[in-house]
Amino acid sequence: MCGILGVVAKSPVNQLLYDGLQVLQHRGQDAAGIVTAEGNTFHMHKSNGLVRDVFRTRDMRNLMGNAGVAHVRYPTAGCKSSPAEAQPFYVNSPFGIVLAHNGNLTNTDALRDELFRQDLRHVNTNSDSEVLLNVLAHEIQAAAGGHKLDNEAVFKAISGVHRRCKGAYAVVVLIAGFGLVAFRDPFGIRPLIYGRNQTAAGTEYLVASESVALDTLGFEVVRDIEPGEAIIVDFDGNLAARQCCERPSLNPCLFEYVYLARPDSVIDGVSVYETRLHMGEMLADKVRRVLPDEQIDVVIPIPDTSRPSALQLANHLGVPYREGFIKNRYIGRTFIMPGQALRKKSVRQKLNAIGVEFKGKTVLLVDDSIVRGTTSKQIVQMARDSGAKRVIFASAAPPVRFPNVYGIDMPTRAELLATGRNDDDIAREIGADAVVYQDLDALKIAVQKVRAGITSFDASCFDGKYITGDIDEAYLAAVEARSCGADNSDSGLETRQLDLNLKRA
Image (cartoon, one colour):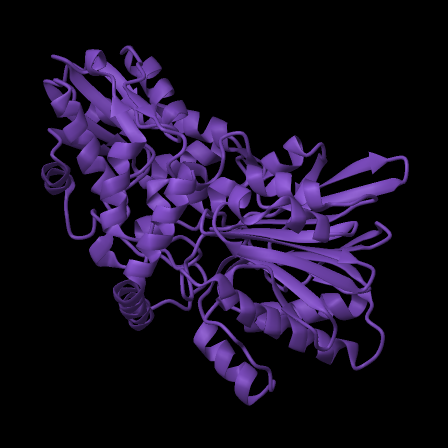
């Protein structure tokens, strides 16, 4: 999960891209970067940290030009603490090309070997995004044939990328002297949407990970980019679109609706907020079935993502809804912090209980999901410390039992609380009197109630079914081995960097 933006406008875009990254900050807090195009010259600034910390006034002044791409990083592949892996990435052959990527390639090792042995291209980092950039550059070189670049060559090159690259990817690209390119993987796992803004000087176009970026920046939503599709916007503002894959299919990531996306976004025609309301209705039905004799006194959400689901659940159960936790908004989201020790440290900094809402009550806590369980365990203990008589923990998502290889940091089964445990085991592990999980079919229905036309999803972290068809036990074992090795070697550096970010915040 990362946040990406691409824009072609009629006036300087540095402030617009900065504001857009602020809106997409929830999609990545590890690093941020902006590249702008001024004629045939690219201007770049990127570094580790939050958007507000990476960019200073002097940096913004240097980002000149009426077109650009931007990125906020949530690390899932490569060296998670290296500033060298902040995006966008750049190559200058066969043309100046800048790329920002959201997702995760699943055949990175094979592609890296192909680039070195066959394409004669060099990759400097461990990032799959740099691999993707070089694959695209090679395909453009082959399609252009050494001649002037045109739309036909770019569309052909993207078809080549689809043939070679496996996994999930939503991409924005700037090509010097040509324009902005955006495309999405053939399975449509990661979101990508574009909009336009009519000005006196002409039409401006903006591509983003979520529709909320278009809304807040004053752009009218046109539509989602389709799976396998590419759009090209030249520097004069002319747009062309083409399907570049033979058999595309839409399989949006269910976890986008559960947790990753902002509630005011619409992804693939589905309102995230409406979906979370339906998730609350479905979860209320599940609570009634599995706990028919439980006398629940109050429903309390774990802020912020679970609020819509918790509110709707309370309404359907006929139980009072209360805010029982106050959130310190200057602490980062614990789910995307890489070290368990830092997660444990930050939960108490992040949330504080309102004792009067817990004392002597049977409390139903509602969270969007339970992944590692570290946060859940501490929250349950906070409820008990505040005087709760009984604590029931409900998850608006099904049990997370499998690694996600498509761009969410769920790399090892050993880290996932639900792996190898039933509901009673999980309740004991987090200290709750009972745990209630959403059913997977119910979660899918919650999305389909908003848009009936979606029939397939990426639900791999819930059901272990990897829709790209290239993931097996050997692949998962290799990913887990690399992840454990990286955590052991870099954990101290990561902790120091994140401590610094928290102090700045």
